[in-house]
Length: 507
Image 1: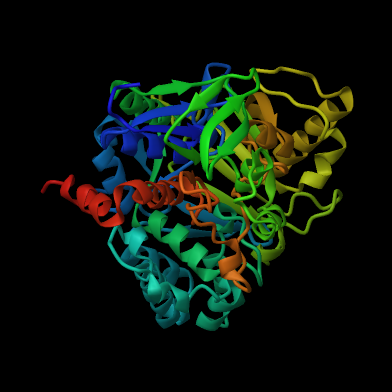
Image 2 (image 1 turned 120 degrees about the vertical axis):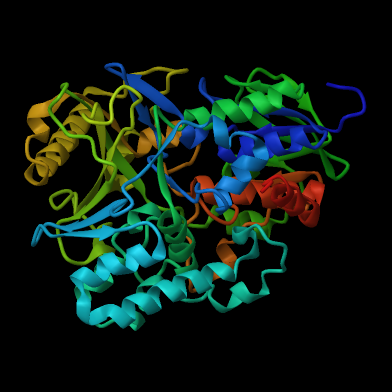
């Protein structure tokens, strides 16, 4: 540690931990990031199969056009010009498909183009579509941090208690348009009569503004953030599982790993799920009521993912994403049974530096409940700790994967014949790599009926312990990056941090 620098220890190297580490390193702190897995990055992790690179969680991002919010954050961090990324189809970054009629509804980039595209399919709903776009933007303006502005956020209280499904229903009586407007709710595991409209608006808005894929995977973000930390004299240490936060005299004095090694610090930031953090924190400073609330918050659903490598020259590459529904109601796709699974699925293409004509790989993703794999809950399997769960588990994955591939082949003709190989991830995979109890892909589930209950403050009753990550404010690359700003503002001051970000933009 450099003499005179305050020491910050960050547990977890997901994007929340790395953005916090990079920002604090740039502002004179000595940072140590501790990661239990072999690879850093959390949902930014990638892996290669058959010489193809797959993202574990980040398939596309929004807000990266010059002047937009995520662009500004990455510009401040000095990484925007170093990222290899590709803008998606401006006329159709997402396509919503109902298999009952096979029609595609296109989400276009830019609000004018977005509205025009939908009006072509729903000409009689022109006024409703324009009003919807205005309302989405108005909701976003109520969140100062989302705009990278200083403000108390008082205005957002007016929208916290509004349900997304009810909001969309108030816009139009056209059932098909209602479902189209909620068609990519897989981005936030949307649930009817639960998901607040601000989640829908903040997520969708960033993609409408601009949508991008990372060429050769999102792990490049993690590598660039890691370099900021290490170039500033900090440390990013993998294969280090923290099993204890030690509190003494009202403050955390060190964290301890599974080998008994202690890491001392002045401040500690947990990028681990708050429930897991509290499990390994023994302190009477944290009230039992708070522990109980956090432990009983419901997490969002998990997923089953099939990463498919393709035979050369057989599947055209597309700069778009598909959200396919087997039924007309997009809000009920989590309510599957073993027989009806899946009720919907997404298809994402992997962007490769080798070619943008032919696809090398695609990912199919469908919702899956943790209960469906719970019989194998006592098993653990990662690159660092490899293990075979059981033949029964492998059979389960194979059956689910082939069912999903067969289903996708009906819509994407020739996909099945083009499969070179496939590799599966289940809720257990997400659990083991991401550190959640149930493999939740988007952290704590938000509920408009009790919105403040699911807001997790970065502050705790222990002054030098802070939370960050997707459970603070919002998930996704943009959501977690903004959550990291909120966390860092506790040490740097909000006004100072926001001003520094805006001053870094130049012309």
